[in-house]
Length: 388
Image 1 (cartoon, rainbow, N blue to C red):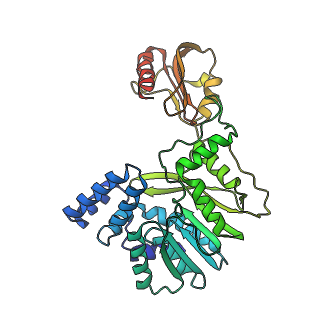
Image 2 (tube, one colour; image 1 turned 180 degrees about the horizontal axis):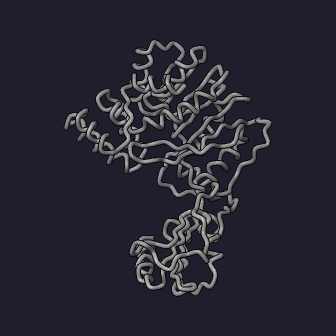
Image 3 (cartoon, rainbow, N blue to C red; image 1 turned 30 degrees about the horizontal axis):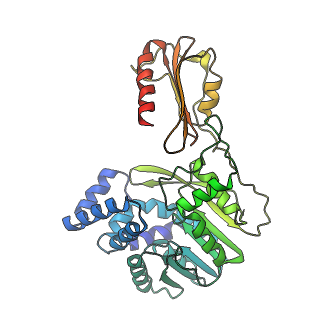
């Protein structure tokens, strides 16, 4: 599977890079100054976040000169997610790829399953035109592409399998659904808040359209940028609220975006009439935070201003709660303009200075330093309050 997928991506002209420096050097060599200027301009427009700017971006970047350079940034994403999807299409006779873009993965699925009929849809006319040309060049008779905006029109046909990867949640910066307060990871079941999330991100209308196009026993395969608990919980509730049940345990997804590692997903396979007993999990992911031994803390750090202990994981809260002898010097609990509740606390405990910060979008941080370096933590405390 992986070898076939690698060859397919190479046919599209995509390359894998281990560093930003190598990638951007190739980008400058591969694109003319005019193409580079056009690309940067469209990226800036896309960041404004309007649907029109999004479509214009994908229309412009579907051009054969820009396409391989831009999409090479996501080469490892295609390898990772493409393999996960392809392994699960199985015996489906008809497959819909929602938000197919230029058809990089859709054409791979069609090549891998020549007896299955595939339909790729996207709202970018430029992307669909390129996808149609590529499918023709590959000689694929089991695939067609259509320009469809599901927010404006219903889908035609019924499918055994619907695939949606990075296509349902169209608001990457939306923080999601806050927890009850800064001391807990639990969310209320307020339907008003859930509906607001689905409307802000557009997921509600899209899921409704895809659900209507899915055969009664069909499977929905989805992977979105919902790794953070505040986004994962309302996303899962949107699926569950439409009768979807897990066919298999969700999987976190990790891939490289040029020089950075992206933790994404989870990767879900769901079905309306699944017989499995897998429950939707609304707890934080298994914790990888560093172990903490208060009695074993050194008196000083080997490097000036370096913390003796620092934890950014959910276990930071438990560690802070179990930190013996705390005396609070300063603390602030307040509501921010984005709806989150923030708590920041600076204190001393048995010869150490500490800072604990938590908010209702599940960010936790616990830092311990020698008491004589308290000033560094005080400056950090002020910085947190000023930047929130």
